[in-house]
Image (cartoon, rainbow, N blue to C red; front, side, top):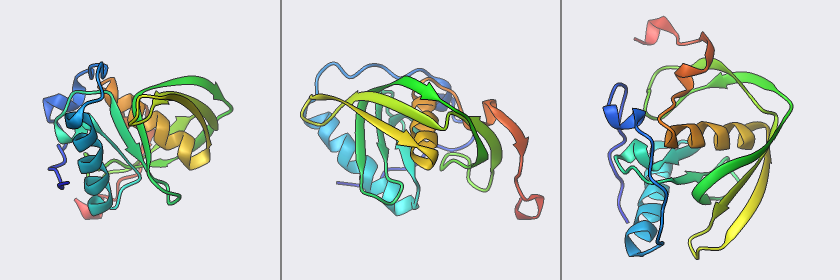
Length: 154
């Protein structure tokens, strides 16, 4: 397990679409472990593989209730609306107001290759949407209603 470097700002890999994981092998398991270590080291809520330079559809999320590993995640249900502030480990020091669904259901595989569905509301729904967006080369700033970055920090 290792802490990987988080790609920042205008790194072109953040704008690329990630490839589906076809086989869960030792490389994918190591990727999951490294992503978890990197997420915790950065004190984040979620991390997508492109953020550490790997174009695979792999995400880890932890909103304070334990790690959730998602391989090939797809949002299969959305309901409601929430408007709140978001930031991103790849855009340090920045934040903005983004509209997201209040509730989502995500379908993914776990590290054993079993397909599962998980529902999330509020922060978990926001995190699922934010990280799946990363897999499609979309940053929260693309959906931002208003920039809330404190200009005194820049």
